[in-house]
Image 1 (spheres, helix red, strand yellow):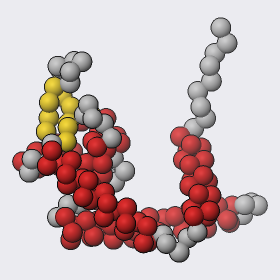
Image 2 (cartoon, one colour; image 1 turned 45 degrees about the vertical axis):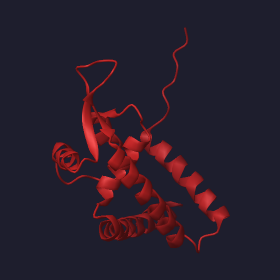
Image 3 (cartoon, one colour; image 1 turned 90 degrees about the horizontal axis):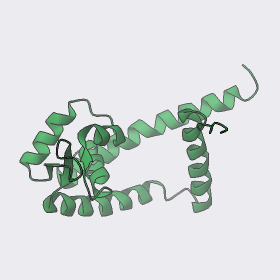
Length: 155
């Protein structure tokens, strides 16, 4: 193994070991408390950030949690529950956007508070300075995985 590979591998394994169990526990907590999955919370969260709604394809691309099923089926169920709605985009009526309903926004706001408290409890043993350093490191890693930034061509 080359220098640094062992530590890189160990880091990757630790990330893999914590991500799935933490996501499962969060999903369980959201289902027990709100009757909603982590995927649904993620969808509501993305829509809460976009007051003008999002086209379905863009919304699907923003979701953190993978959807094992079809996004259209998920949306149909959430529409039936009056959590989200489809509307034509104002700029181009041919484009259909997904929006939060008032009921969906209220649910998301309630879930967001509980979610933030749950995360804070899970990470309470990690000092804030280490959390900031880890965030910076993971942000750099994510940027590196996305590839090098596009270079401007000289004119």
